[in-house]
Image (cartoon, rainbow, N blue to C red):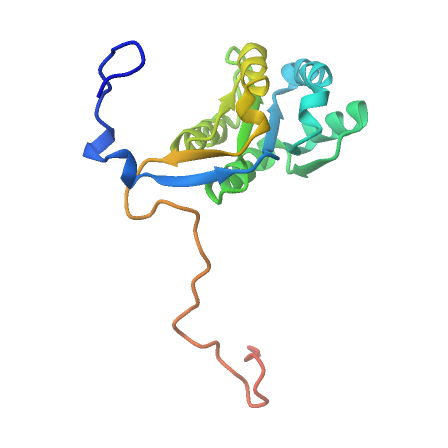
Length: 189
């Protein structure tokens, strides 16, 4: 297959065709997670101030301190998670894996050592696994938020890494919970 400029397309990973990919639909209103390390928070808030008109059409999520700054300085509603070092990055990663975050804006400082670096790496990894757009600096955030795709529905393709691709679903337990003599849950004494 040839591309627009005549270049040859590479085969899909692991021999899969695009038809075998799972599709995740992002609505017109995107769910955007915003994270910034301490010395990048002012930069993120300044960027958000400049792009406020675009961002107010979407639902915003953030780690605790970043979310508080966005809310106080810009007056935008933000759903907050724990602070990054206290598990907030992991909470957002979990939300991504369940299909609850469509876009990640993560202003991080590659020159600053982080005590929670494994959490940061896990978050970036899960965003890539689930094919979630990630902006790690102002330039990439500017290009992404100004894209016409931000104003319309979009289907992300999720590669078929295994049979376990797609948001998890609640499955009923094959065992019934233990019941006490009155029919209620059994209480340990």
